[in-house]
Image (cartoon, rainbow, N blue to C red; front, side, top):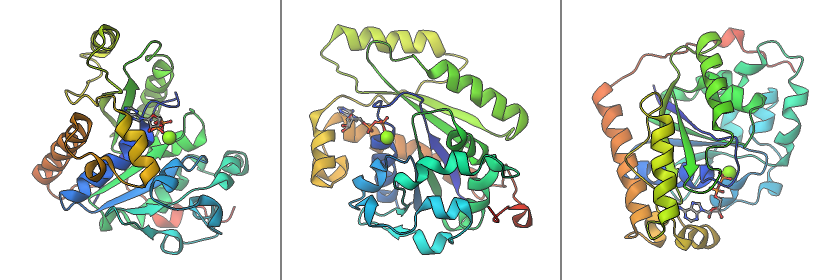
Length: 275
Ligand SMILES: Nc1ncnc2c1ncn2[C@@H]1O[C@H](COP(=O)(O)OP(=O)(O)O)[C@@H](O)[C@H]1O
Ligand SMILES: [Mg+2]
């Protein structure tokens, strides 16, 4: 039973997709079987994986709507993990699912059929607290919250934390915040050091903050442009090492825990696929 991890923050541009992508690639380096789920209509993760989102006739949108099976859209990638791709179609799903029974469990229904095939399922969330985010939190075991070490970094996180509390109470009692992941840390500036200290001060000990800090580097943008992960494009920079260390920590834990019981068992017969 694979561990499902949502990578989310209501704010855009904080490193969600970069984290989903490079963490997934780093887990694959450790022989972990990984599925990436692109749950953002902007489809950045799909693009990072080397695909043109507009060329897909069917994506995660169709699977969530119940008019395609996961096998039909799942793409192997050259980075190791498989991908459930997205494109702009996904932007209207929130409206379309509005009247569906158990609309917050559509993703859980979708993933229940493949969960046993993977060690990790990483969900790249869109920067909003809407129905897609609710679906991600309802099915996930853990959430990683990337926060950039910059001015106003903490804005928006309070809303996400409130939403997580509500989901834990009402939909998924096993959900756990795995940690806040400080990203874009420029170790040369006092501002970044101050912000990192502020992040720790504001959230710990209630919400854990990873010791792994993702350093700022132009290599991340360059690697995306080149269609590579940071692990191959600039394998020795500290940011690459941080993602490797994070992957080591997650996979060590998963190995220790061994086969896990489902925190959120889905009875497939309850999946509404008639939207
Ligand atoms: N550690 C980093 N250092 C420098 N630039 C980064 C870093 N992580 C991500 N970026 C860049 O910042 C931009 C936004 O990152 P992205 O992962 O797409 O954020 P999000 O998914 O939260 O919107 C991208 O251009 C990406 O290449
Ligand atoms: Mg993104």
